[in-house]
Length: 462
Ligand code: 4AD
Ligand code: MG
Image (cartoon, rainbow, N blue to C red; front, side, top):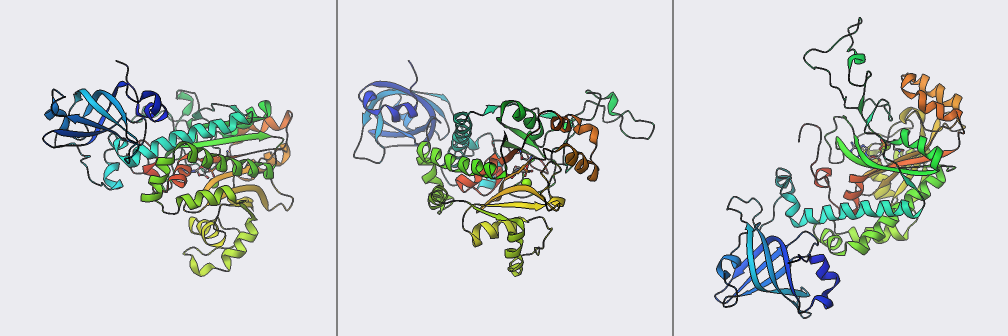
């Protein structure tokens, strides 16, 4: 018999009312009295469970089913009954049921509240809890919203490579990709590792960003985006850094820094609207258990214009409030999370774009402003997180870019193809990178990045 999923029942309650259907899932709770038993199951298609009602005289294996252990997998056939007067709008009146796979007393997810720290030790089982059921459905819906947003605006989706030869952020925090024998690495005359002997005949690493490759595509398709995994070997053990995380990176030709910020702002608003529409149960769950301000925050985002201020102005504000910071702010410093959160939470109480940072603290590809000191960068800071987006207008002028790469002592060979783009139909263009996990933290109120990644990989081990 065909399996009906709980999400289908929710969508077609009236049509299915009185019909005999079969539902399969995992037991959340079970209880029985002499004559009647109740088993709640969740099939993963919805945040909501399905209540199954068993009558002792009608169900052959009544005892076994109504005592089914939490976590067992079960298939139930019965009549769908609408119950508009009770909390759940429908239930299943069981005719027949089977336990597919049982669990023992050692099943770690018995019905009680578990700490998120404990659940991180069982990443293979935690998707079955309410919290992770909600987190990963929201994660999936958010990905769909992002693809829809760009699709509706005529962007091409590019799959930039995961193995690359250039360091986009110039920070050197990269994982090497090699097939060399670690116990017996070939060396050059100078004693360096001889990468000519390696798989690619050169040094290779996991990408930190798909931006540089996306730029090549933006100069052909006009508007593109990448959405894929990126890797950073920075040894930051914080609740906001992962070694493997996903990034959304749009890149647009004929687009300056202001257009770039408009798109970033529209994207965040679009995602909030999509989630309110598609995940109301999950959002109200997060609002209740993880962030009491979540719904207020959503309203605030949808109805406000994000702030846009210059780095120089932001530093003035911070300097006047330096008493609040461990790291005192000054012109030229990189903004610390405490500064970012102060601006977005205390000063403005909403998302803030900070633009025009000193060139020394930003990447080589950002467009140099006329003052010769700052670059056309933009970071979007949001309450509770700090930096959610990092982007810029790109340096489209050949000579200026070459000079920047030299100044910074980067290996110009690695960037030859990238610089070459400035010699053939170069144009004003811009883009940004949105950290997908930080976004999921933002829209759920979950405060540790390890709890929004299916199988988190962070410094120190997994
Ligand atoms: O600011 P970042 O380093 O910018 C870039 O990589 C640019 N190439 C993007 C572009 O313009 N196309 O990273 C972008 C975003 C950050 O704002 C942050 O949200 C996220 O990626 N991010 C991380 N998220 C989790 N763990 C980490 N270690 C992260 N590093 C950056
Ligand atoms: Mg950044």
